[in-house]
Image (tube, rainbow, N blue to C red; front, side, top):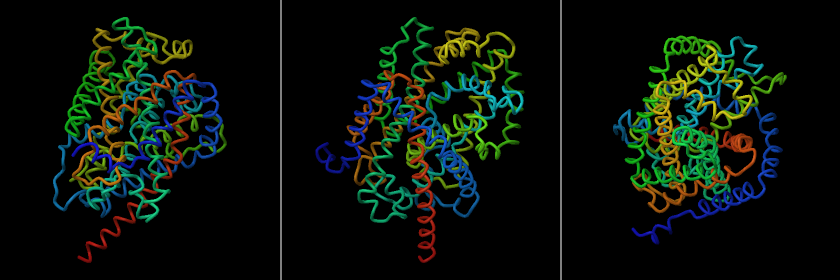
Length: 506
């Protein structure tokens, strides 16, 4: 089929409107960075403070729903035809699922997140700040249940109900009926696409500067905007090649990413000289997490004695809810043939240990440098206000630091590429009016989204107050994202109950 025939199947507003809005935002970020930052800053307090309960409640609700779906009668439902086998092996499926949900920022925060937490009065009041820093990191970065619950809803829609519209509006059709085909449906799908682009921008803009600093330390390449943009283009080229090969290419690149990631983690663990400290501190921190789990879920700090909950708990929940618009569709695509129980519990069994492994090794190794007075990383961070240079200092404490830097660079590039090839594929599916399970998006559409997704991060590189802008964007998009995610879940329960009634009548 040629592209002219393919273009008739496209839902052009889903491509044109987000593209135009992103170009407009990019233009403002480039020409009026201060004014744009002020605009986001004005909106932020309302969502971060007044709507705190929404973010925390939705995350907790999805956690409970994940448990319920896994151990209820729904868990036995095959996400495909009855008796159908999984489309991918557990390793291949898990690698794609983990990589699409975790960009290179997991490595960035693995090294640096404790720097902020250890100085927070809220954390210090709980006891040893170096213990509780990782407790919160484990919690924030292991909450894949949000992706898996919504991903299960999409998988049911696609592989069991065989719906030909692969969109968010279609996922909530059981609730809104014919309105899914009208203006309301279009608004929902345009917002979902915008949220995807915002999530991509947040991750890329944080992590690519880390790579430039590492390249500067390794090869003397200037750590400036030009290098950052060249890196973004390189990442775009890599995931475009992966994307051109469809799910097979994404699976291949995801497997490479996991292997490189594990090599880097083992490098730090085995050669850093702090293996015993890492193991013992991790053991203690996991115990503290289990002991405080439900308190962390629900401690919203109603008296606002500190800003920790709003600055971190609300931010992270909003950030993941933005990604929960992005990641679940891809998880749904690759989960064909698995049961609901296998999808949720298998996903958690693969993703949660991966996140915990990253923070237990990288954070505890970094903390050991501070605790045993090798380098005062907190002072460096507070003095420079730059976490990128802190990572470079940490790497320099390892044997053969240039080798470690090279592995870190490769791992971060792979993580970014594996996240965004799956996201480009998701956007490509969204771009069609109708697309059956057995059809794939046209290669031109996939490459179009591969390019579009890189524009917003490039614009943010030139924006003043980039970190603030990113946090504000995440919190703002996370609020309607929370509502949309819950609508999808409610629609799923209505649809699956109807499905079971239909089966009983056959």
